[in-house]
Image (cartoon, rainbow over all chains, first blue to last red; front, side, top):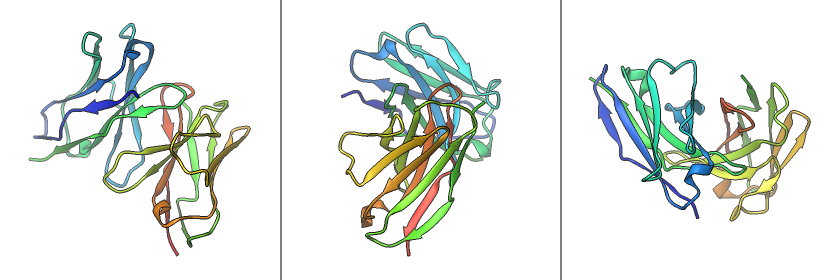
Length: 115
Length: 107
Protein backbone atom coordinates (compact mmCIF):
# COMPACT_ATOMS: atom_id res chain seq x y z
CA UNK A 1 0.00 0.00 0.00
CA UNK A 2 1.60 3.23 -1.16
CA UNK A 3 1.67 6.03 1.40
CA UNK A 4 2.76 9.65 1.22
CA UNK A 5 4.19 11.07 4.45
CA UNK A 6 4.69 14.81 4.67
CA UNK A 7 6.93 16.91 6.87
CA UNK A 8 5.61 18.66 9.95
CA UNK A 9 3.88 21.97 10.54
CA UNK A 10 5.76 25.20 9.89
CA UNK A 11 5.46 28.75 11.17
CA UNK A 12 7.06 31.41 9.00
CA UNK A 13 7.43 35.19 8.91
CA UNK A 14 6.12 37.16 5.93
CA UNK A 15 8.74 37.30 3.19
CA UNK A 16 10.34 34.01 4.19
CA UNK A 17 10.32 30.72 2.28
CA UNK A 18 8.96 27.34 3.30
CA UNK A 19 10.03 23.91 2.13
CA UNK A 20 7.62 21.00 2.54
CA UNK A 21 8.64 17.41 1.83
CA UNK A 22 6.60 14.38 0.82
CA UNK A 23 8.11 10.90 1.06
CA UNK A 24 6.55 8.02 -0.85
CA UNK A 25 6.67 4.41 0.25
CA UNK A 26 6.64 1.56 -2.24
CA UNK A 27 8.66 1.01 -5.40
CA UNK A 28 6.55 2.77 -8.04
CA UNK A 29 7.72 6.33 -7.34
CA UNK A 30 9.14 7.08 -10.79
CA UNK A 31 6.01 6.00 -12.67
CA UNK A 32 3.80 8.82 -11.43
CA UNK A 33 3.49 12.56 -11.16
CA UNK A 34 3.36 14.14 -7.72
CA UNK A 35 1.12 17.15 -7.34
CA UNK A 36 0.92 19.87 -4.70
CA UNK A 37 -2.45 21.23 -3.66
CA UNK A 38 -3.26 23.66 -0.88
CA UNK A 39 -6.39 24.48 1.09
CA UNK A 40 -6.76 27.75 2.95
CA UNK A 41 -9.24 27.82 5.85
CA UNK A 42 -12.79 27.41 4.56
CA UNK A 43 -11.65 27.38 0.95
CA UNK A 44 -11.65 24.88 -1.88
CA UNK A 45 -8.53 23.00 -2.90
CA UNK A 46 -6.09 24.94 -5.08
CA UNK A 47 -3.64 23.21 -7.41
CA UNK A 48 -0.10 24.59 -7.29
CA UNK A 49 1.94 22.38 -9.58
CA UNK A 50 3.37 18.95 -10.23
CA UNK A 51 6.56 17.10 -10.97
CA UNK A 52 6.94 14.02 -13.12
CA UNK A 53 8.87 11.78 -10.76
CA UNK A 54 10.50 9.89 -13.61
CA UNK A 55 12.11 12.71 -15.56
CA UNK A 56 11.73 15.68 -13.23
CA UNK A 57 9.55 17.66 -15.63
CA UNK A 58 7.53 20.32 -13.82
CA UNK A 59 4.36 22.28 -14.44
CA UNK A 60 3.18 25.17 -12.27
CA UNK A 61 -0.01 27.11 -11.79
CA UNK A 62 0.26 30.58 -13.29
CA UNK A 63 -0.74 31.97 -9.89
CA UNK A 64 2.35 30.53 -8.20
CA UNK A 65 4.78 30.24 -11.10
CA UNK A 66 7.20 32.90 -9.89
CA UNK A 67 7.21 31.70 -6.26
CA UNK A 68 7.01 27.90 -6.25
CA UNK A 69 9.63 25.27 -7.02
CA UNK A 70 8.87 21.55 -6.99
CA UNK A 71 11.71 19.04 -7.08
CA UNK A 72 12.16 15.34 -6.51
CA UNK A 73 14.86 13.01 -5.24
CA UNK A 74 14.48 9.56 -6.76
CA UNK A 75 17.07 8.05 -4.41
CA UNK A 76 14.78 8.72 -1.43
CA UNK A 77 11.40 8.78 -3.25
CA UNK A 78 10.81 12.27 -1.90
CA UNK A 79 9.23 15.32 -3.47
CA UNK A 80 9.81 18.86 -2.23
CA UNK A 81 7.75 22.02 -2.59
CA UNK A 82 9.34 25.36 -1.85
CA UNK A 83 7.18 28.49 -1.72
CA UNK A 84 8.98 31.80 -1.44
CA UNK A 85 8.04 35.38 -0.50
CA UNK A 86 5.35 34.14 1.86
CA UNK A 87 2.36 36.31 2.72
CA UNK A 88 -0.33 35.84 5.35
CA UNK A 89 -2.66 34.62 2.58
CA UNK A 90 -0.35 31.64 2.11
CA UNK A 91 -1.42 30.24 5.47
CA UNK A 92 -2.99 26.94 4.52
CA UNK A 93 -2.69 23.18 4.65
CA UNK A 94 -0.44 21.93 1.87
CA UNK A 95 -0.95 18.46 0.45
CA UNK A 96 1.04 16.29 -1.90
CA UNK A 97 -0.92 13.83 -4.02
CA UNK A 98 0.12 11.11 -6.41
CA UNK A 99 -1.46 10.96 -9.83
CA UNK A 100 -3.16 7.84 -11.07
CA UNK A 101 -6.67 6.61 -11.57
CA UNK A 102 -7.22 6.64 -7.79
CA UNK A 103 -5.08 9.47 -6.37
CA UNK A 104 -3.24 9.01 -3.09
CA UNK A 105 -2.83 11.99 -0.77
CA UNK A 106 -0.43 12.85 1.99
CA UNK A 107 -1.68 13.78 5.44
CA UNK A 108 -1.17 17.51 4.86
CA UNK A 109 1.23 20.07 6.31
CA UNK A 110 -0.04 23.19 8.05
CA UNK A 111 1.90 26.31 7.11
CA UNK A 112 1.20 29.41 9.15
CA UNK A 113 2.54 32.77 8.01
CA UNK A 114 2.47 35.36 10.75
CA UNK A 115 4.55 38.26 11.94
CA UNK B 1 -7.94 25.31 -17.89
CA UNK B 2 -10.82 23.05 -16.86
CA UNK B 3 -13.34 24.49 -14.39
CA UNK B 4 -15.48 22.40 -12.06
CA UNK B 5 -18.88 23.71 -10.95
CA UNK B 6 -20.31 21.88 -7.96
CA UNK B 7 -23.81 22.21 -6.51
CA UNK B 8 -25.37 22.73 -4.11
CA UNK B 9 -22.90 24.53 -1.86
CA UNK B 10 -24.70 23.17 1.18
CA UNK B 11 -27.67 21.02 2.09
CA UNK B 12 -29.45 19.82 5.17
CA UNK B 13 -30.59 16.23 5.42
CA UNK B 14 -31.75 13.66 7.92
CA UNK B 15 -30.35 10.26 8.74
CA UNK B 16 -31.79 7.80 6.24
CA UNK B 17 -32.22 10.35 3.45
CA UNK B 18 -30.79 10.01 -0.04
CA UNK B 19 -28.50 12.89 -1.00
CA UNK B 20 -27.33 13.89 -4.47
CA UNK B 21 -24.43 16.22 -5.27
CA UNK B 22 -23.51 17.24 -8.79
CA UNK B 23 -20.42 18.52 -10.54
CA UNK B 24 -20.13 19.85 -14.06
CA UNK B 25 -16.86 20.06 -15.96
CA UNK B 26 -16.24 22.92 -18.39
CA UNK B 27 -14.98 20.46 -21.00
CA UNK B 28 -14.74 16.72 -21.59
CA UNK B 29 -12.77 15.01 -18.82
CA UNK B 30 -13.93 11.53 -19.80
CA UNK B 31 -14.33 9.67 -16.51
CA UNK B 32 -11.38 11.28 -14.71
CA UNK B 33 -13.50 12.50 -11.85
CA UNK B 34 -13.06 11.76 -8.17
CA UNK B 35 -15.21 12.44 -5.12
CA UNK B 36 -13.82 13.11 -1.65
CA UNK B 37 -15.23 13.44 1.83
CA UNK B 38 -13.53 15.84 4.22
CA UNK B 39 -14.11 16.43 7.91
CA UNK B 40 -12.64 19.41 9.80
CA UNK B 41 -8.92 19.17 10.42
CA UNK B 42 -8.42 16.06 8.32
CA UNK B 43 -7.12 15.21 4.85
CA UNK B 44 -9.67 14.44 2.14
CA UNK B 45 -10.82 10.84 1.96
CA UNK B 46 -11.23 9.35 -1.52
CA UNK B 47 -14.71 7.85 -1.97
CA UNK B 48 -15.16 7.43 -5.71
CA UNK B 49 -12.56 7.42 -8.48
CA UNK B 50 -12.97 7.18 -12.24
CA UNK B 51 -16.46 8.67 -11.87
CA UNK B 52 -18.09 5.48 -10.63
CA UNK B 53 -15.54 3.20 -8.96
CA UNK B 54 -15.90 2.73 -5.22
CA UNK B 55 -12.59 3.09 -3.36
CA UNK B 56 -11.66 0.09 -1.25
CA UNK B 57 -13.15 0.27 2.22
CA UNK B 58 -15.82 2.84 1.35
CA UNK B 59 -19.41 1.81 2.19
CA UNK B 60 -21.60 0.83 -0.73
CA UNK B 61 -24.15 3.54 0.11
CA UNK B 62 -21.82 5.88 -1.80
CA UNK B 63 -22.07 5.76 -5.58
CA UNK B 64 -21.03 7.90 -8.54
CA UNK B 65 -22.21 8.32 -12.09
CA UNK B 66 -21.40 10.26 -15.24
CA UNK B 67 -23.46 11.73 -18.05
CA UNK B 68 -21.24 13.56 -20.50
CA UNK B 69 -19.58 16.35 -18.51
CA UNK B 70 -22.04 16.03 -15.60
CA UNK B 71 -21.13 13.92 -12.60
CA UNK B 72 -23.20 12.87 -9.61
CA UNK B 73 -22.37 11.60 -6.15
CA UNK B 74 -25.25 9.83 -4.44
CA UNK B 75 -25.38 8.84 -0.79
CA UNK B 76 -28.26 6.52 0.00
CA UNK B 77 -29.51 6.03 3.54
CA UNK B 78 -27.42 8.85 5.01
CA UNK B 79 -25.62 7.87 8.22
CA UNK B 80 -24.46 10.11 11.10
CA UNK B 81 -20.85 9.63 10.00
CA UNK B 82 -21.65 11.08 6.56
CA UNK B 83 -22.16 14.66 7.73
CA UNK B 84 -19.12 16.33 6.18
CA UNK B 85 -18.01 18.36 3.17
CA UNK B 86 -17.75 16.70 -0.23
CA UNK B 87 -15.55 17.78 -3.15
CA UNK B 88 -15.26 16.73 -6.76
CA UNK B 89 -11.85 16.68 -8.46
CA UNK B 90 -10.82 16.30 -12.08
CA UNK B 91 -7.51 14.58 -12.76
CA UNK B 92 -7.81 14.21 -16.53
CA UNK B 93 -5.17 16.84 -17.23
CA UNK B 94 -3.14 19.33 -15.23
CA UNK B 95 -3.89 21.78 -13.81
CA UNK B 96 -6.14 19.75 -11.54
CA UNK B 97 -9.40 21.44 -10.66
CA UNK B 98 -11.77 21.02 -7.76
CA UNK B 99 -15.37 21.88 -7.05
CA UNK B 100 -16.10 24.44 -4.34
CA UNK B 101 -17.45 21.80 -1.99
CA UNK B 102 -20.85 20.75 -0.66
CA UNK B 103 -21.41 20.86 3.07
CA UNK B 104 -23.89 18.23 4.26
CA UNK B 105 -25.28 18.95 7.69
CA UNK B 106 -28.02 17.62 9.92
CA UNK B 107 -31.53 18.94 9.36
